[in-house]
Length: 118
Length: 115
Image (cartoon, helix red, strand yellow):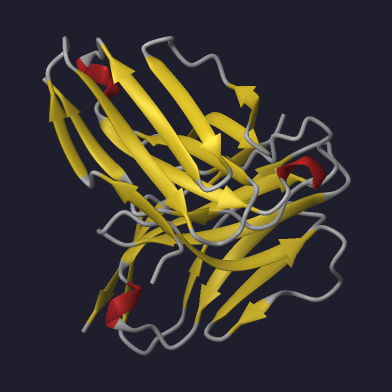
């Protein structure tokens, strides 16, 4: 069974600074995918970035990058040049890519609330 | 603009009421999901439909009844709920869940309060 751990319930960052949100995972699967989602107060979960377990390079999407350390089973999200609009809940999630059940289950962590300070 | 819409956005209901949540996706996906998000808990997958057939039901109480009439619409029928069912209910869709699927796209959620 997969498990996602986000140890930071809340984080603060100064506007224009970079911030790292931690995520560790536990799985016995060889093929899996790691996701980060942003959830503003409106409630919608917004996909940010994806990393496959066999991807050799760390994923990047604009100001978002994923620091993937497979041996440590960590998939930290780095947000560069923080903006006030980045204030939200951030969720790390994982999916077993070899799942044959057809369920395409995403397993989520408990989230980190990021507050960007002007 | 999100490709997944949910109505209503907010719902208050008594324990004896019957209500339904609606989700519609405009992305051409063939898999849809219901999640429950309670405070300080990870998102819980409730139901998965792939090609309009239910493929997963994570032991959800029978007072929640899903319906997927076609690949674009998903409903969650609610009856005789309990106060602990108060939560944010999120709908999501993806392409081809049966093959490990793609990224899931979420709707804005329905915030439910059961009195």
